[in-house]
Image 1 (cartoon, rainbow, N blue to C red):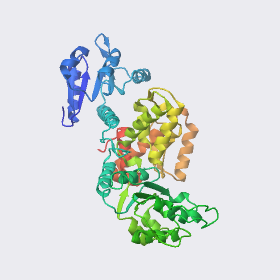
Image 2 (image 1 turned 180 degrees about the vertical axis):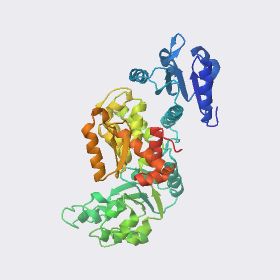
Image 3 (image 1 turned 90 degrees about the vertical axis):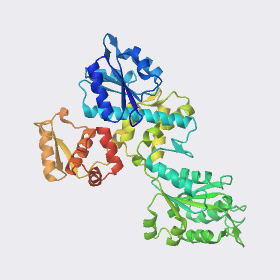
Image 4 (image 1 turned 45 degrees about the horizontal axis):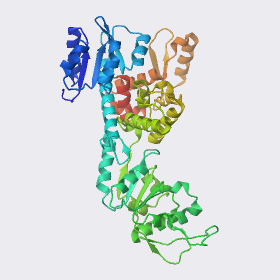
Length: 486
């Protein structure tokens, strides 16, 4: 095995090609094993399992496509990349239809080869993490949270550290990132796990009912109060109270919550005496809490009481590798729920999913996969099953001050600032252009990122800042389009 612990099996009957590909594989830190045909595989591999397979389309008189079923049975989780001397859409379609991860043409393009092998091994690792998840391993997540990205591992570490204590925690993150799941994980890992976990979204409560909802009320305290009610704090005594959207709580109620945090007592609406409750408070917001304090939507003293330990949940677009892991996990869950046969996401669909910015985060991904499973049938989720807005979603983050037009006398793409001169240039181009001159949105995005990287002398972070996207997004796009920082 190579330094990375990853190995690629090369099945090709040309010794010179075997040697060349082995060198290219080893240059990327992977090990390479070469077999001239199916009869050599056992002796070459022994008991090892390849993390990717490079299979020649034509092995002497043997059609390589006839081996794919055998290889998929033998190595069900190892992506197969076909290598062929014929480059056509028909060959590509045939390869994908047979179950290939991707296909490459001879002579090999070094950059494309590197990207393809890296992506194939990433696919193998993703399937391995999914197997661990199905077997109950925590390597793919933690306490119901799915993800192995460095950002999520940091979150898991904080949860483990803070759970055994009784300090107040404030969880910040965009809508759909899983703030309630984090709160539930803290509760589950704490000494309060046998007590109740009560979740209350403050934004969903009418202001006139918010105090009674939180602190409870006595019978007859107001119209409709036909019986006494304990309220969320009373119900959570001995356990954890999760207050979502804390910045939406009325200011008057914030003062009463502050008193409870200080004295551990509260008074129900219409009550004549104070009651005690032992409830740990975990709060959350999708806003910047410091800005909410400045805007007088959150009391400063309450903010400091609640924000003893902050947890910042990363948006899905910045969680490297987690999109594929989540998509496959959710797909299998819904396939089981709705009696479908889906087993995974094919490479083309995965590339689309990974290219999206996911403004609705994990919640948006879950709902999209659910829709696809309900409306489609098959073993693999393919790109044609994804809704059309997915194609538009991949274009989020385009630089607003740059446009691209094809010159009428060249196939090159021209770049210009959005201004009146650009409109003149574009109009002139359209006058001579045909439908063949239409530039795809994917090509525009690729060119925009490539140009920004060039103008920033390969500094991806600076290019991301000027494009108005995150550094995680630009590195994802660089990998997606096979761009170079050189």
